[in-house]
Length: 337
Image (cartoon, rainbow, N blue to C red; front, side):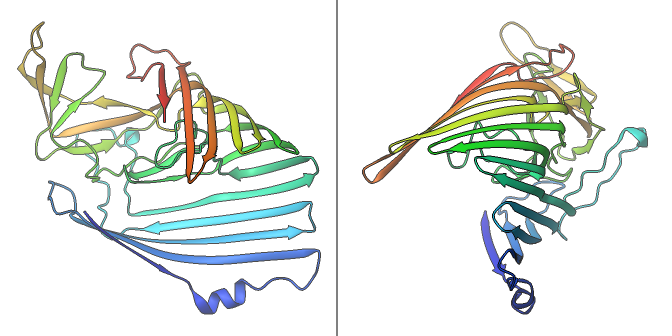
C-alpha cells in the first residue's frame, strides 16, 4: 500500500482567524486545517476500490477568559469521492437497514466549556479522553467511541461528558460521567477491511464461513444490551514520583467497539465433526448488526525514563457485564502492552 499525505494551511483565512484579541483578559485562537489522505492498494478485491482518497477539514477554536474559563470547539468533516454509496439489499425491510457509507462524515469532535477554580477543574460538553500511554494500541484508552476506517486509521468521537478534576502538586484525580454515550462509526459496506474470503465467528462454533466473491455487506440497525449507552462513568488517579509516572483507572459503560452479529443464509459444504471444522458457504447478502454491550475495565499505566530509553507499560482487565448467550460477545479478557 502506498500512502501520500498533504497538509495545506489556508493562509489568507488563517491571517484573519488566528489573530488574538487585544483584550488582556479575553483571548482566542482559531486554526483551520485542510488535509488530503490518499492510498493505493496494489491487490484488487471485488466490490472495493484500489485507490481511495479522503479530504478532511477541521477548525480548532479555543477561547479563554482570564485563567478560569475556556471554550473549545473542533468541528470536523471528511469527504471521500472514491467511496461507494450504500446499496440496500433486496428482500430486506428498509426500516431495519442503516446506511453506513464512508463517502461523507461531519461531526463536532470537541465542544466543551471548562471552568478552573484551583485545584478543581469542571469540564462540560463533548470531550476526548486520552487515558493510555502506549503508541499504536492502548488497552486502557476505552472511554471514547471511534470512527473506524481501517486497522491503521481510527479517530476518536467526542463523548458528551461532565468531568471533575482535582490537581494538587504531583497528584491528579479525575471523575467523569457520560449520561448518554455515542455509538461508534464502523467501516463502510464497501470497505476492503471487512472479511472477503473466510470468516470465523463466535456464533458458529467449530465452523468456518466461506464468503462468495460477490459478497455484499449491509448494516442492520444497532442493538443495545442492558442500557449500555446510558450512565457511563469512570475515574482515574495519576501521580508523578520523581521520574515515575503512574496511573490507575476504572471505567464502566459501553464498549467503544461493539460486537457484530451476523444475519446470513447458506449451505454446508462440510458438516462440523470432532475431527474437522465445518465449512458453511454463504449467500452473497451478509447483514451486520452492531451490538453495544456493557463492560467494566480496571487498568493501569507506567512511564519511566531509563537513560536514553522511555519504558511504557499498560495493562487492562476487562469484565463483560452484559450477559446474553444469544449474542456474540467477547467475554472477559486481559490486555498488556
